[in-house]
Image (tube, rainbow, N blue to C red):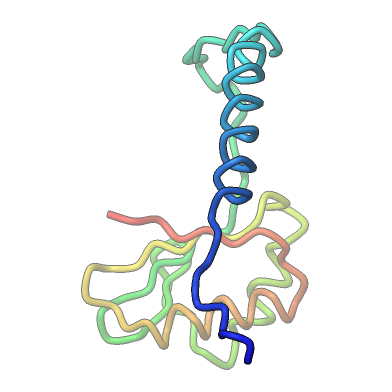
Length: 125
């Protein structure tokens, strides 16, 4: 009668790991020599002479919209933004008061996108 084989021979596995270790030891020093010599440019602060022409809307704490100090009703937002787009091609800047509602900001962004404004910024404070 034949006996069951209950032992695992790990010698071939050990041989494979040793060969891989030797290969990695030979290749690792070569990897440091292959590379690109790059110089990182230094950040230079330049005075910006370009004046941005944006439509500046302020959103109050109670959800009202103001353009140049005048209140703009929600129904007139799209026509007001459309009329100002030609004279202010750089987009829309939203200046929210600290406790303004998120809903009012999103509504203004949606209206601006629907009339074709491609750049909308929110000023943090």
